[in-house]
Length: 258
Image 1 (cartoon, rainbow, N blue to C red):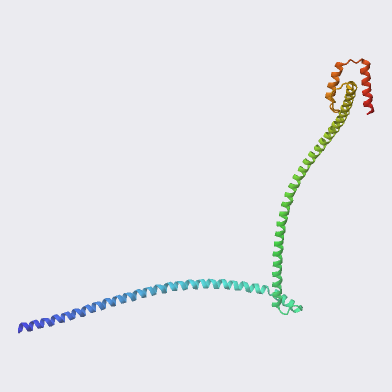
Image 2 (tube, one colour):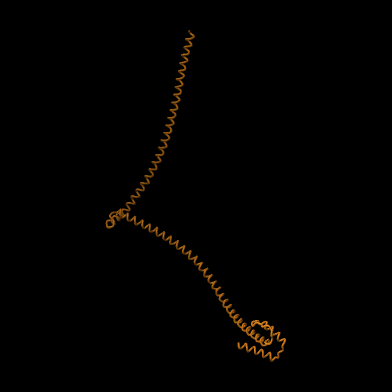
């Protein structure tokens, strides 16, 4: 019984110790979780502090930039004020023009008209510049074409002069050949007349010498055969010088009559 009671007591204590260990472990885990949470909060606080520091530096830079811009604007404002004060005389002049003119009702209308005229002047200047540029381009192209045409004209003139020289030479040569041809024609005509006279004389001699021969008849225009026949007949018959002279005179008279 005492052993059982002792064992029971030990089991109870063991159970209590076990429960205490569990609680201790839970506390340790809770402590770790708390530490992690605190560390995270500390990191977040550090990041927030860093961001705030960077934001503050950025704001300070922006503030400095704004101060510099404000200073520049202040200087510009003062300069514009001086310019406005200096140009008040022009405003008074424009106001006086509007009052003295029936064309404009207020200053704004006058300024609008002036702006429109200025724009038109600018456009006219641009158009004039474009026109001048185009005219210069056309002038340059025209000069180039004139130069090219001048070269071509010079070449054509040189070629024309060469052709004229060749034409003159051809005319001279043609006149020379015409003269030669006329001479040839005259010579041929004379030779033709002489040949005709010779043929007629030969035919007369042939007829006188061979009129008694009963040979074949020789054609009238076959002078060579007639001469051969005459030569052959002269070898057969004998003529006295007076007879031959008579035949020659008779033939000559017949040629003269023709």
